[in-house]
Length: 443
Image 1 (cartoon, rainbow, N blue to C red):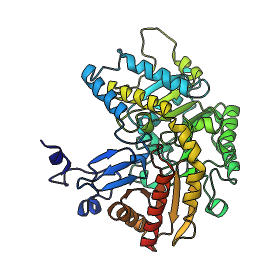
Image 2: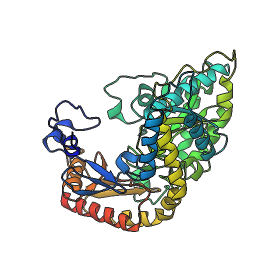
Image 3: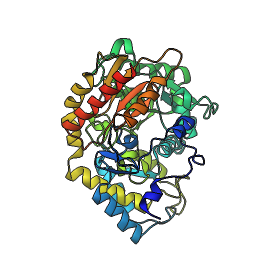
Image 4: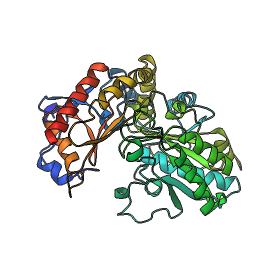
């Protein structure tokens, strides 16, 4: 088959696309055929600046030679190794690299294939930890309104985005939710972490009082809620959660599937906020999106609690056929090398203020009702069309792709900018200019 023939599908009907308005897409497809650096290319050759890092994942950009080469060489050397009762060297090398990168005593890694699997793994670890520690009544899980923790039943249960929940019932019944940290009246057009909202962490005390700490296993939050439209944690919020969890013996889980690997200028947001959670869920940027991979970083005392009983017995009955897949491990190791050699995290940190200045210049454009940013992530809320929520956002998706030569993430009526972290000031200017033209075109 020629390369061109593999990029030109002859039938759109068979593929049921995820999180997509399938009928609208198939009446006017938005196809990409290749990618390099900061850009995608359509099958007919148009060049699109990637303002979304693919899907929050291509932090090192696209088609990076060292990552491609590592995947190719690994496929030729060892294409698959069974992860149950057997291992391969790169899995252990990668786990050590990640543990060294994480703060505190997050010394152990359990590999998965996605962020959704990472979250469900962390929730199982939390409940399992309390069981092996003799506190089996601690099974309740606490999430947060407007949180997104993937599409597994566990992640949906602790998540707080109603469209992800309403079709599937209660899933896990023993859950509760902290209030959302976003309040437009108090936080509109904030730069970085909002001044207002740190006190909302104290709502955890009310949940503890309602259910009793002896029934609660863990609290899971995103340091920055990305999928719901870039909601940064208010100042002091995460430290306050840590203090409350410590007081009541609750585990604190950070879902860093989006914030991990440089999005907020550090390897993990936990470092930015000087908070060591009990577990960190990661995925996406660990391989810069090149091969699916996720995992959970776990503090030493949690890991060690499982390491009891006969040495020949399985300690944690959980795992996936493709955990620590050789190609994913090779891609991740090459990605970590690239992050280090090109100082990708430092680049993101150095450009944060430039990025903030640029996106906040959009204030005052038609229908712009709020702008938020933290690290290299920003959201522009547009006023919805009366009676048609999401319609203006969908029009923005069409406008940016077909007429502005930009691939942008849109959530409802919120435009999101989260480009690869290899960007420079010129890329920022181009993306914000194209966003401005898009907003004006929708007025």
